[in-house]
Figure (tube, rainbow, N blue to C red):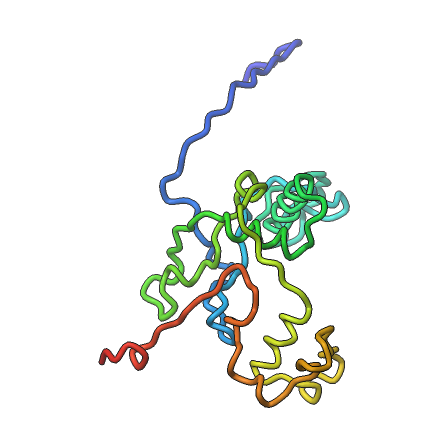
Length: 218
């Protein structure tokens, strides 16, 4: 190494190299389909969460295992907690175009405009690739003008819970009262169970599981 009095450095222009295998679902990420409601595809959305340059608390060592007394303000991290800020920022971006939209409308826009994911984590599994990644990776630019949004209210969620067999005795702390007229269901009724499920819920991503019994195939 040659020491100089006036050392100099050079920063070159970065280059973007497309990855034909991306985006993919991380091995540690949750995947669908939903066990409780297979007729509603899960997860809702996906976002970048691998090797993200993120803010970091300076009083926490950047590496684990001890012996590291460094203090940094930024670190490269991976996890679902890294995806969350991306989704929050995308939601805020959509909200600037539609300030009167509700949270469910913004969520709907993000879900219906998401792009396909190359899922390799469930290959050969019973869920199948197309039902494992939900709506896909968010696309904020497209979400600003989705063309169609699904508005969902508390009543829709209550009806969904009732159709799955939940009631006040299952979760006493849960408020299952709705704002529907008294002529409609205001509490979980026996008639509601196992008839609506996800199909009666205005959810942006309905699914239709098909079994061999339903198709008549062996």
